[in-house]
Length: 206
Image (cartoon, rainbow, N blue to C red; front, side, top):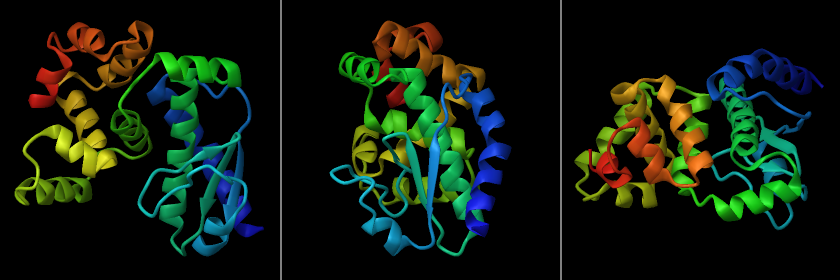
């Protein structure tokens, strides 16, 4: 009961700031299911047949239910709630909140998963020293010769770093605008040319 109250309070507190960043408002209520521990969360049947969150992965929305779990760390639970709200709003912005509209738009808009997951991660939590250290470690490891290799192995980190770079190099307000234009044009390259004056592949090379 206390966890439920905490999650509800966090969702109310965090909703406005995430809506302001994504520039999109929640159109219909999302239900939040919170589990007392990770094992209960993993054994839930809410997402039967649907991949749920992996440890360290992104919170998943299943049938308009945001599923989170408590690992003893309230800060982590808050992050999950923020990430879940960001996921709902991002999916609604890109694909619509109607099931039929969602399916048809998803088929038309082929954005890389790292790009969407990274945007959700950025909307939920700005770039941090911790992420900076993770990125430095990845770069210094010598495992990655291109952005695509990093994005394949560490999609959320790569995506988050990409949007942070866009914000620093091309202004923070252009982060959501680039995603929005990708949806409008149904083409990332066209959106990149408009915002960055460069092709998408050239921005990734940067």
